[in-house]
Image (tube, rainbow, N blue to C red; front, top):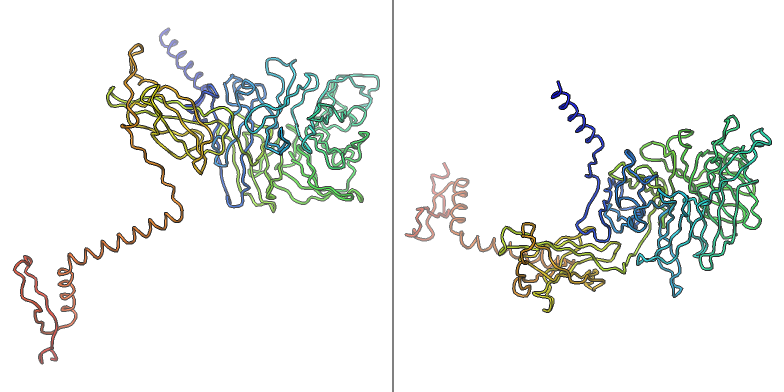
Length: 610
């Protein structure tokens, strides 16, 4: 009985272990982890419906768990979240997992800002909330340059921090959403004199150069509690998050566009005195409209004049479990601010027909396409302006979500060197091969890798290979034991754009720990360098011409060699078709071992006419 019980417990233990075990097939791990220790990169499932129309650019996304642990078990897993850049094939370009020690970040995107010399250069921006284990710590907003170096960072006070939006306008205005706990009177809910802690929302407009706050707006006394779809009068303790601001934008006139998710309203706020000019949607809507939205995110100005404006927004169609519309969608809306009418111009539905009940964004791309980030599992899709679905993609892993997804052109030029590791392989010390793995986290201009080795620490380095870049990490194998190795990153014109320092090759795994390292091969004599063949149209045409000439020459030679056999075959075929007397054109060849005869039809005999 005890034996069977022990066996049952063992089986249960294995089953429980398997239930919470992780299958990492939906992640990529590389051999060059020096910049990102223990990291895993999520794979992508991508479908292109018409790639020819897709806008060029890189995907900017920030996989995260809300509380820092795995979505299913809350188990902490190192270096899988944070800011990431991928190309359109889902190949990693840059992983910023280690920038904030594996903390989640939000609203990660590219933005053009003036460099030290005043010229506009690409930068990165994002926000970080509290550390999960330190909820009283400040948040932070950060800007990096294209070399992945921080250029500006400022704290978000712990009692105000909200990571919904960091929008940089006009090259120097940082717009940020804030949230603050305040005790408010519940008179709006018919309970005058009763007070409760509520979360009031607001935003700031800060000068990036001076750090001065130019505008500070709060919802207190401007957005009433009764506007909320989340905080309800019939609840004994109304939900504290009655407004939930989640997006802020600014137009050329200096007015602000603010999204309140829990009020289902987009607000236009005067940039001088802060009063609400109008409301679109919600319980106090000011427009006559031919559409509806609910629980929205990411409202943006598209165009503005004195009588009309066009805005975009992401329509969730739901607030958490409160579904109003299915599926979720992205919208362009035209507003006539004279006659106060709102017209739906375009709508882009979530391809799988589902609802994004929280988070999400919409981006207008430079060529007019639309990118929609559906948040769950990193789901993202791209449409033509007319609404044709061009692409959809999502994380292969369902363990992560992302707040927003973007697409931007990007040029990354890291200040740190490429990462190179080399390992020796073989069955004995005299017949070894050296395997190289190289990557350069964030570099976008690499076309080739050139590998070098030295015979000893003081000898000159020798080129041992030149290979095209393949994906995030490129591998290369050299015969022999190559040591004191290094690598150069080359652009498409074979110009050097970066290189690693010399490093030592690790000995084979079977090598005794205290045994001396193998004697390195001399790279100058052991390896013959073969440069890569760059096939242009001119070279390709030459190759085709050469191969065509080769085939024609081969056919001609075959005819000359087997001409007599071919001729015999032709005569026999003619003899079968045209009856008559045939005379040999030349005497029988004694070397003709087959004893075949060649004939030619001269004059048919009289009997042929019978």
